[in-house]
Amino acid sequence: MRQQRSLLLILILVALTPLFSPGSSSAQSTHRYSIGLMGGFGASTSSEPASPTLDTTFVRDDEFEFGLEFLFNMEMRRGTLFGVRVGQLDVELANPSLLALSIGPVESELTYLTLSGEYRLSAGHYQSGLFAGIGYYGIDGQNFFEDDSAIGLVGGTTGDFRLADRWSLMLEFTAHYADLDYAQFFIMGHVGLAYHF
Image (cartoon, rainbow, N blue to C red):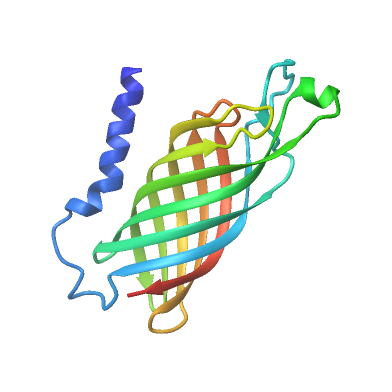
């Protein structure tokens, strides 16, 4: 438990590093903030047990589901961003005892809020980035299942293609870990538009 707390503290400090970095972005970038709305697909990668017991509830991992994500970025200095992401991914909950009664799977949602630090490289009208941070994850239990929530970790890569002075096309691929009872690992891919101001 002490090791997990230490790891979480280190990751929090990494995610918040841009907030304490010296320097100002105002002289280096005309747009310090950006908001974005993206849609995409994701799936759990390690939730369905090989031999589930009758009381084991899990997220089905045999297909990708639709998801949405809202993004807010603040540039702390050149090439360094602090980001907030709020998202939702459709999931299906299953339980062997209910499946035996022809009940399920039950549609539900994974929701999350993440805070991360991102480092970007620029190449003309294109930027690529890597980010890591922490998040809060929850699965709505629905009908026969209890709600499930946990603190987790996120890491990913981004691509930002400038379309106009204030608009860009955003691509994002992420991996999420949270110690949920129903699932622990998720992967997601999103694409959408970002507005810079």
